Image (tube, rainbow, N blue to C red):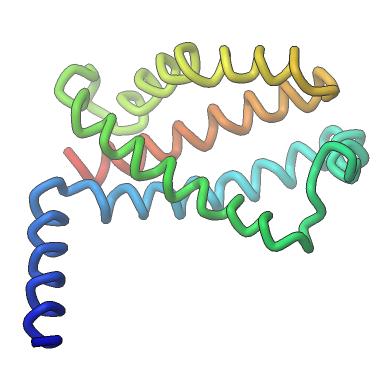
Length: 156
């Protein structure tokens, strides 16, 4: 009985994964965005040293030792799955031959529709500097661009 339940559950998951074709590419895009985000974050912290002091403000940000901070890493994979779903719906409407250019065109629209308003509400609601807002906006744009580029190459 237990074996039959596991077998049905596994075959159901495989059918779902084959049918939607989003999970694998989405998780790959999430991994790429995580790595790119870490690199871009370090680069921006180097270029704007004041950001490090802002991130150290425990009244505003959790310490890395807090177990809840592990959700930070989950975010990129959830975003990758969401972007894979979006790419699956609009890939035929995004013009261009090179995956990088196609991804840029969609990233720009996504950034304007989702990230820019999100950054505006963040800036109006939290005591963060404009430098941090700029770093988050630029970093997010680059991460999304890399995520969509992965999807454009994998999910043609």
